[in-house]
Length: 340
Ligand SMILES: *[C@@H]1O[C@H](CO)[C@@H](O)[C@H](O)[C@H]1NC(C)=O
Ligand SMILES: *[C@@H]1O[C@H](CO)[C@@H](O)[C@H](O)[C@H]1NC(C)=O
Ligand SMILES: *[C@@H]1O[C@H](CO)[C@@H](O)[C@H](O)[C@H]1NC(C)=O
Ligand SMILES: *[C@@H]1O[C@H](CO)[C@@H](O)[C@H](O)[C@H]1NC(C)=O
Ligand SMILES: *[C@@H]1O[C@H](CO)[C@@H](O)[C@H](O)[C@H]1NC(C)=O
Ligand SMILES: *[C@@H]1O[C@H](CO)[C@@H](O)[C@H](O)[C@H]1NC(C)=O
Image (cartoon, rainbow, N blue to C red; front, top):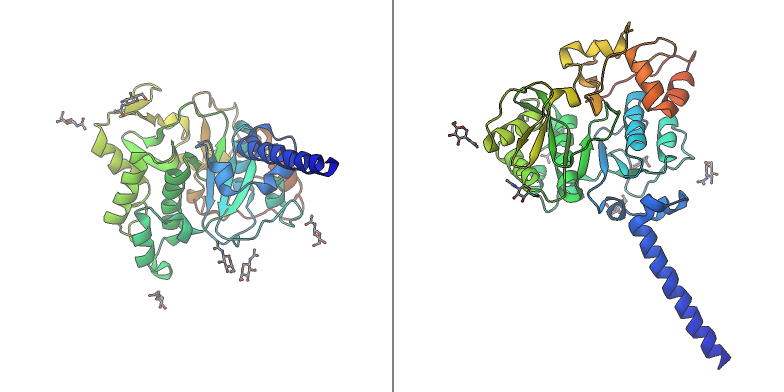
């Protein structure tokens, strides 16, 4: 009799434990007090609530340069109650580099409790989207802009499948974006694809993926990127020029004013690496796009230089600043060869 009671109790505890475990999976990243839970979470667990902030690396590089690290760290700080997910093509499927990693940036990011680093597996990602036919037809080695094009495709598929906010890895977050469905205007009547947000399975993203395949032209840089977003948006609404700092709205999609992410427009990108007499006013911005694509001369943040970028690092990604900028002083600064 005693033995039977023991068995019943035993089952009861297993049952309770299973329920608690299930709950911790669903709410793990919100309520977790131990980073240990992070290791047991699958991609689906982490991303199931359309709340993720998503970054993508489509080169095989495994060590994020300082700007990429700053971008992810700043998002993890601003969106401290949401998962920040970094997809890297260079990670093998079963590889999970932990804080033991010898890569400084990799290890500081994986140590943050709401940062998740997963392998980017395009073959799997494009399944059940219009992109799969294109992906099977295209020969990556013959594509001139493959790193960019595969990134353009991956970000659409990720937001379609999981929802959330996509950001380029040269964007520094400075305050939360208050809307969920949005495109970022880069100039009047022109949309960027460097930052956008939608809930999962949103029709606009599906239409973008169909347009991507139908009008594919790998020779024109941006044809599957900003030009694609812009032509889909123009097909929906008559865009007007912006007035003051007011956002526009098109069929429930906010079209955010250029000041929100691009207060320094791309021809002036060098200003981020200059010393300012008075700090610029970014009070109308949610995040700052540093235009790393323009940075062919590999300008980088140098400790003690007092440039705008250095001050942004100190404020919005202090761990990156401490470990990767101050930590490497005297040993020659790291090259930024980011592709965005
Ligand atoms: C990924 O797999 C390849 C081939 O199996 C191997 O050469 C490479 O070192 C692996 N990369 C990592 C980061 O484990
Ligand atoms: C992961 O990689 C291994 C070895 O390369 C392969 O056998 C396996 O199918 C891969 N798994 C997935 C989910 O791609
Ligand atoms: C960390 O790396 C060392 C040396 O490669 C290894 O012996 C150790 O098991 C690793 N620790 C963990 C927690 O993976
Ligand atoms: C892709 O292009 C490369 C280089 O032109 C060629 O060697 C390879 O056979 C092509 N692959 C396919 C699957 O057609
Ligand atoms: C755009 O404006 C034109 C002319 O005013 C109008 O005919 C058309 O229906 C508008 N399109 C949309 C999507 O509102
Ligand atoms: C916009 O959103 C509201 C509330 O979510 C909904 O009732 C309305 O139908 C939507 N309009 C369009 C054009 O999608």
